[in-house]
Image (cartoon, rainbow, N blue to C red; front, side, top):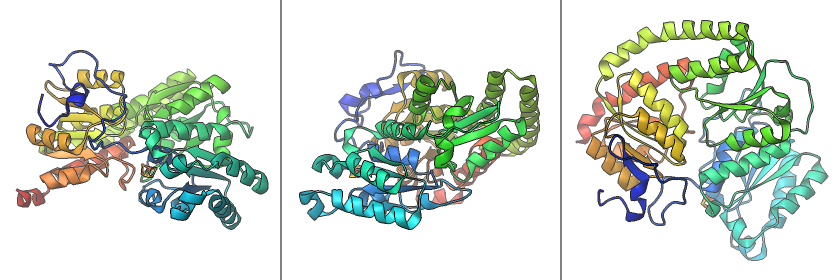
Length: 442
Ligand code: SF4
């Protein structure tokens, strides 16, 4: 094994074809490895932030709020309160004497000013250390202001981004079931799509054309009242196995709402997402409409993709994303445009995900769990990748090495889901991979 891979991490790296047995994963990052993973607070914020009529207040130093301030692409068709990032801006005084009075004052002032439908209060590392009773303040303000005020216990140090997803799902679960309105028979909730660059609207259009009613979108373009009534949908359709699976499981246990996992990236997975919903409702009519949509969309898309395939054939990609479910879709989508995936990894994948990746990948593809910049840079050089698909923390790795980069994370401004998204993805991969700029970086 290469000497840039720490001894403790060697079993978290595999090569398809030559390594057998399950990958070691789902464990805390090795101290000092400079993991690409984000913290618990970040995970919770990713999930809850797109709820557009809620107040989001970060109880912690201003630095925690900086990363989330208006850089994410989650769009709203109505209110945009989520784009305001509020922080209690804790400093030395509160660290010594406690931050509860500041939180109480900030919360009450903001609720009076913005009149939100609910408020989420995020605890960060420092709050976990000084021990503010955030739950008590939330209860008090909820009673005084008569709206749900939900504590999100997310001190960054208590785990990884994945633990943050869980914390967020638990906060959401407190809202579910607090409203009871009738919904049509063929109704679904969409879980785990965050409406980045308006992607959710693309998906909703397909489902609507099929005759399926969307009850709650959790949390892309999210609304508090729809989430409160989410238990009345017939099915939870969950994208991204990591972020919202916990909420789906909680809703299954308490409200008996079944769930299924889907992905909206790439032609194959997008089409399956429509067929699986039609199958669930056991409706010939829904299935016929799903087939019509797939026929129409794929018929339009394939000739256009062919142009890109001819030009990209033989290019090599590195994929490093948050969830392994997305990585699986990306391997298939890249193959469709002639690009071979030579490195694939995720921050939060589990052993089963990595088994699927191993089977799907070409011989000698590097598969990596919870990687870091040193490993990723060396992998890219060894495999001579032409393009990197990742998020905000992978962008500088690609640019420093001098290869193309495609943002497939929460900051993206280009819709990459659905059939339209597949077309945008091909265009973006082509533009960045073939850009003449890379000749000047050698
Ligand atoms: S690790 Fe702690 S201090 Fe850093 S952003 Fe996360 S919550 Fe804030």
